[in-house]
Length: 128
Image (cartoon, rainbow, N blue to C red; front, side, top):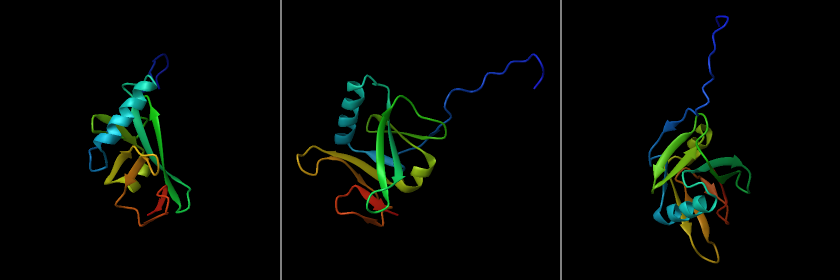
């Protein structure tokens, strides 16, 4: 660097735009997510879907509401909402569909993942 010059670090997250081939959100899930984002005051926020180690089958899904994508994320606009997935999780969720079931028993968010070789009986974890 030349003495006296100032360079500002790039603080804008560098993300890639994906499409519904990575992950798709159903109308029911989109409606629920939109409501949750609005309730948290994040009407322009995103849903982060990640795969982490754990659960009885070895891998499990983690979902979180955030303000914006992070560096290296994939951003998918589906069902009127924005979903972000980190590159490592993208390997596991490609082709998945996120749905929401409003029921007293076995309700909540459900992921249909074509990459899951096996899943546990509760549906909370999977192996690939």
